[in-house]
Structure formats: C-alpha cells, structure tokens
Amino acid sequence: MVRYKVVNNGGFMNRNNSTLVKMIMLSIFVAIGVVISPILRVVGFCPTQHFVNIVCAVFLGPWYALLCATLIGIIRMSLMAIPPLALTGAVFGAFLSGVLYKRTNKLIMACIGEVIGTGIIGSIVSVPVMKFFFGKSNLTLFFYTPSFVLATLMGATVAFLFLKAMQKNKMLDKLKESING
Image (tube, rainbow, N blue to C red; front, side):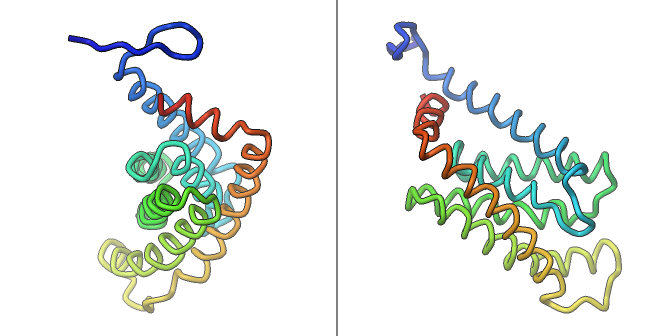
C-alpha cells in the first residue's frame, strides 16, 4: 500500500518522491562537478570539486555527498585521464563535510569537514595509492597535503559564501526542505 502525504502546494507526494528528488539533485551535482572541473581547474587543484562536495553535503547529507564525489571522480578519471587523486582527493572530504554539517547544522563545520577530510586524510591516503598505481616511490607522507589543503580552502571559501548568501535570503532552508520532502 502506497502512503501519501499532503504537501504545501496542495498536491500529493509519496515517500519515494523524496528519494527521486534527491537522486535528481545528485545527478545535477555530478553533472556540475564533471562539466565545471576542467574549466575552473588549475593543474593539481580542483577547487570546484570541493565546492560541489560541500554544497551536496549540506543539501543531501554525507552518503549522497560521498556518492557524488565518487561518481565525479570515476567520470573524471575515465573521460579526462585524471589520476586516482580524483577519488582520494574528494571522497573523504565530502563524507566528513556531510557528517559534521548533519551533527552541527553549521555551514562552517561542513567546510572544515571538507578541509580536514580532503586536505589531511585524502592527501595522506593519496600517497600509497599513487605509489601503488604509478610507482611513485619518492613521495613522502605529506607530499600532497599543501596542494590539497590549498585547493579545499579555495573551494570551501566559495561554498561558504554561496551557502551563506542562500541562508541570508532564506533560500537554503526552503531548498533543503523541498529536497528532503
């Protein structure tokens, strides 16, 4: 039996519609992440990935943000010949961003989660991955940390300003409510 609830516009929406809306939003975030990454990319930096990670984490939560970062990374690796750093440099931050935002409901914590998750954890995990896949034996444990932290700070700053502007106009809560049913 399908259960329905009345929504604000007087229509009816079942529980599955919330999941459908989230999947559509996830698809949009993935598309934005893939399309924008080569345009606004500096060699070794992809601040738009971190922007998308944080915005997705705020709107959809940690699991969708993790899936979004994974899908963007896989697509970028396969279509743009990006190394596995596209995954290791995104998934930890996306998930931690979502977890910290979900627990605190503070935009700054979503940004801090991205910086710690990608800038620190992701950069450290990237070293053995690059050694294994590309035979780069001369890498130190914190080799990628400076560039990852800088890229996450750039993306987090833009995401914070974007989300703060939405929050000020009361659009953030309205959009989150409509996405989450």
